[in-house]
Image (cartoon, rainbow, N blue to C red; front, side, top):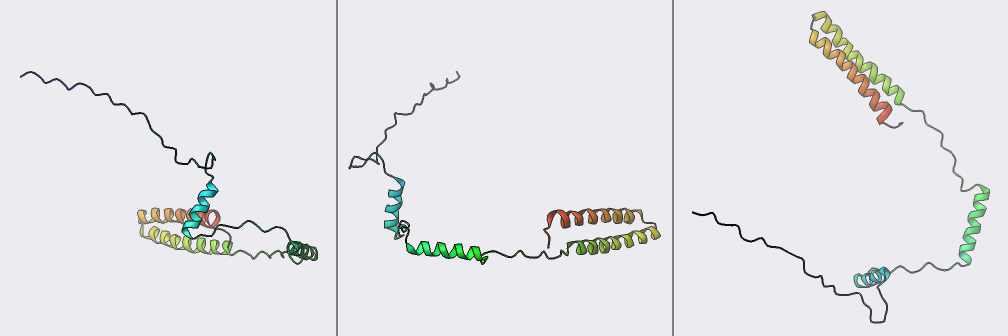
Length: 144
């Protein structure tokens, strides 16, 4: 049975694009401004369109004078807060000594029993607690 030949290759092309100009205005303007879209959407949705800022009047001048007088008298100056001593160093040393003391006690007990695995684990634990606590207390946490 002879082999069937492949069908002839098809070539596809995009047709010419047809665009419809939808933003042409009847009053001879070339384009619609974004503010017009915002105003139309606000009118349809019930959102009020923002009003322009009021013009400068006497009240603004009086308020500016009041602020200037208060600044001169020092009423708007903030007092610097005194720095509270940190408890971080105290907590660090408490946790470092107590955590390492527990693992040192485990090391002494393992040494007395001759258990090499427990000695290795306790030394590794001392290293992990020391490194981890130092990293967290001094590099991760803020002053408290």
